Each structure stands twice: as structure tokens, then as C-alpha cells.
Amino acid sequence: MLDKWDYVLRRLFVLRSTPLKKAMLSLAPGSASLLKVLTDPRLPPEEHVDLSKPIRKLTVADWSLIARAFNEWPFAPDTLMITDAFVEENHRNRRS
Image 1 (cartoon, rainbow, N blue to C red):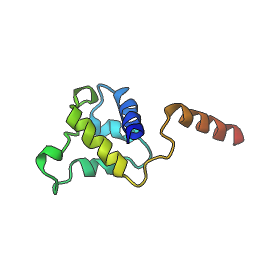
Image 2: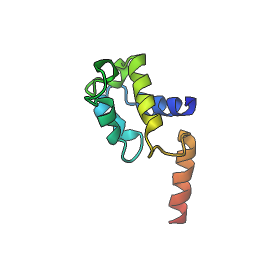
Image 3: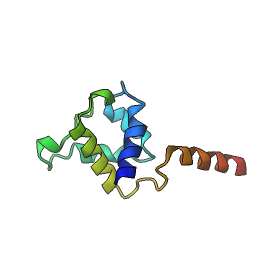
């Protein structure tokens, strides 16, 4: 899961002053569905993440919950290296 932790951390941390609710959209298409997981009322309160919190104010516990939700998300991207994603996007654009 280290590769997913690294991906989530790098994708979100560049948006340091952005609230988590908005920043989560940068993870991947459809990642807004993870917001429901992070605030699921069936979970104990200590497993909720405050979506209004800016990225720079997230605790280690918050990051852990975000990474866990991303890890369990069936639609998480296969390409987790940010540089690989740019190469793939560039390659697709050249073929078009």
C-alpha cells in the first residue's frame, strides 16, 4: 500500500491550502465518491475526516484514513506514478 500512500500524499499535498473536499477531486476521475467513505455516518467519529480542513492541516490519522479509502476504492487508477501519468497522457495526445 506504500505506493498508494505516496500517490495520495503527492497528489494532495501540492494543494496545501485547498480544503480536502475540493482537493480530493484531483486524485482521479470519480474520486468524489471517496468523500462519502470519509464521512460515512456508520463509522465511529474518530474514523471521520473533516472535509473542510485544508490539506496542510491534516493529521497523520487523517492521511491514514484517506489512504485506506483510496486503497479500498475499486476505481483507483492503475498508474500511480505521477510522471508515468504525464507520459501516458502525452502519448495519448500524440496519437490523436
